[in-house]
Image (cartoon, rainbow, N blue to C red; front, side, top):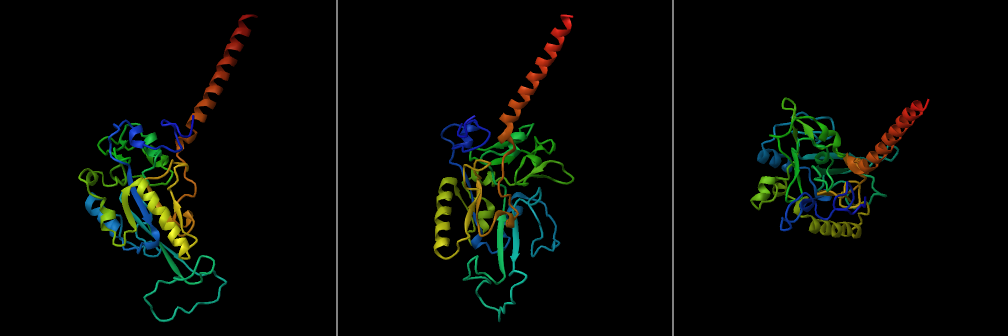
Length: 304
């Protein structure tokens, strides 16, 4: 099956909503571009998400992971702000940080020369994949593709089987304790219907979280990477923007300042259905061989 086939299991797909059956005049695909280089870790996105979507609290105890009190995305955490503290190498000489200043620690130093402590902060969210593993494996149709190209769970249809949890290559979707049903970011589907941007993007004070038409966001992100490279930040790179990756590109992608693993993101996410055609083909060959062997044994026995 061709990678660019509109019905392929993986690879580029220009119009996920159209492929899901929506008419040609459906809205443009929208998504998030999260520029982690300007995230200040304020958690306004987390609070706005919870308030608008009435997501239950997910704990108020520090986890021993800097100022992170949520740890990861889950049924009660649809937005998660990661705090990554990077210090100098263990064998490096001590650095005198001096009196408190207004500059951020690590400013003015590239990746190869950085010796001071720095923060890496990033607001993680469901990726609303082009080829969504959670949607592909859902047996009840609780997960569906919206006209905006996003992926949403219908809790009144979800039976709590959990297939979507194992089907997500990012570990985003989860079942709620005491409920059993699956929950995740909806990209504020109700707000989109009213022409409003998602609550998290609306609340972000630095515009680290940017909402808009996905193609426009990708162009904006490419320009931002070029700008950072010119300003002496060669480690800036995009994650999840490429339609040729293992999920056909994400509807929510990121600008990172280090390797994806540093932020808790998989380096090469792959939708489980990518190998479905090959698996069925191999199973068919094996079944055919078994039938042929059984027929051969039966015919041989009948001739005796």
